[in-house]
Length: 385
Image 1 (cartoon, helix red, strand yellow):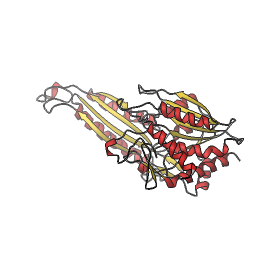
Image 2 (tube, one colour):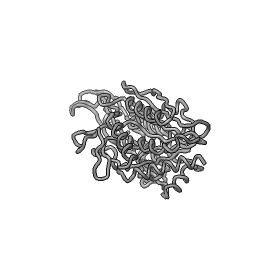
Image 3 (tube, helix red, strand yellow):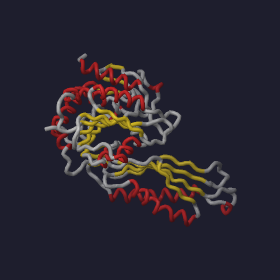
Image 4 (cartoon, one colour):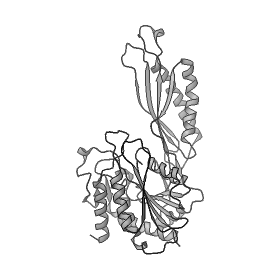
């Protein structure tokens, strides 16, 4: 094993050994402080100036971001990743999810691909430039709660931090440049009618029957979105609206007084989360008013905006040239639109494959390691010419 691989494996093992699950379920949600403090120690040792920033969170656990900076001045290049992982079913793993297991040319462990594995590769990539006089600063971001609320990246936007020209988000893309992805909304519609004895409909106001009208209206809305927002960049080239679950009533002989339904919408570039919510309300509220049914549209989380690289992007053609791969699109969401809101020319590109994420025996293939380190170094050199 080379010194580089030894260092990467040791650092990845330490990161994975520090659990940092983020979840909407408070019983399993965790702080990411230990992960960020370890990363800060590593980057501080490499000569970076490190700042740990608290960020607002729905969790009772403390959540923080890391901004590690090498060099100073205007412009600069950001390497960004998130420090949290999804929850896990530990009994389904064939290896210890909280330690690195190397076998079959892979590093197994929770977060190895999505996306703790990115940080040790960045640490190795920056070493040749520590003593150099970079023309533009190099900034490493390590964010909180990407897997749930993205409160970490949202906090950076609110603070207008950092200021840089380019950003590469190291999500697992197989080192393929990603120029666009869909956004996502997860919403709940809650209807309140009036319960009563089922033998006499006049004794109540059936929320479940009202939900039938809501569903029909959402189906019409879905077809309108499909016709309006086609985008041939994507394999599924239209917005999708999926009815995920419905709960209503409590007994067949009672008029249903409450009915809740949860759904998601995958947004195409050009769609705005808040505008879509407003469109839904404008369609459904009048229908429920006529029925004397209380209507509530509740976001299950703030939503992720769709992302599309700038039309005059510099980092995107640079990435295509350095990798020899034409940029693609993906269906999963990232922090890219938030970093883009900070004024950075942003793409998504990182080691690993999304197919290995969010499942037992997650792994990072070793054949991604050296190519990724070398590619990150090429980016550093390109923006400092």
